[in-house]
Length: 379
Image (cartoon, rainbow, N blue to C red; front, side):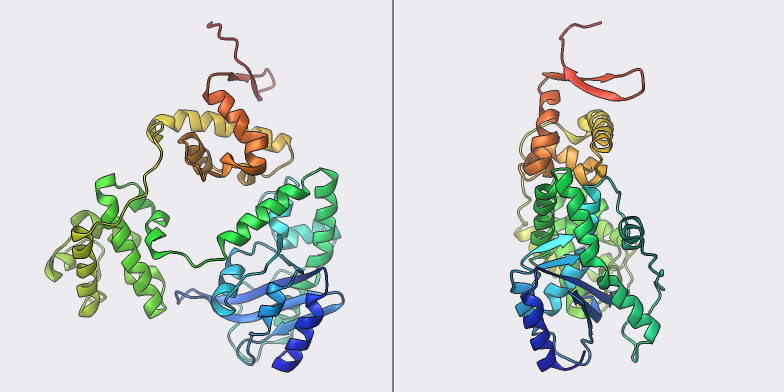
């Protein structure tokens, strides 16, 4: 599809449907921002492929803003590129991978779900396909079309199972969390939280970690290159720990490429370090609670119990809570995933009973862990 006027007409038609399937093909290996190669849409009997190199995608805004539900599979990166290219994400979203998690399937691929629920054997695509090269070959277009053609009936099958198990509202809540998470651009000031080496630094070093990681993020966006091309994670942590004040000192830091830091780049980084020293960024304070190192044995035990209960409930354990989610909850963070919604009602409240001493974990003869009322009677 390369005709913008025709695209607007089709968007108006799709907007009146209850739902539409949506997918994208893109590359981002060599860039900061993903480069869009194709957009696929399907509703009713229609399947259309949009070429962003040949037509404006502005008409898509009306579809994304409409009451129709976007049906997608594992859409985190697709939502990011829609926000970047079109300026918005769908107003309503259902993710078939999330829905599958509520049916007990772990991180299921679209191919596996189609085989399981619709008995469709979808040809495995070539992960090395260059979606930016033109013209695209017929087999490439057929593969791209198949990605969306079967999503509406797949969602119908998953929805029926969710409703049979009383989990449709849970799935809707989780898909809305996913949609909102991708509805706003990432803040450069939060970039340090995605670098393990920086999260492990003592609190006194965290203001500088925030500043340096934010500088790297902005620099990568400015040049449209991956952040690792500016500074590797290892070099980033080394810069924070050494806090160089001169070009010579910066060049001596482990992992820093002297050529990459030459000229204005090195000076800009040094300026960011100096500014952070004069006016340190504020580090969000965590509520007072147990030290995470002291919680490790507790996290291990409760995580094992949660994983077992999730499997017994026919849920993907990772959908209930990761170890990081559990640690955040035990530390009392108000935005911890286990602290609200269906997770708290079903699982978080029971973990609280354990942490307040009102419950205990018992090992059954069959090897399963069971949460039961605490007797208070020591052996």
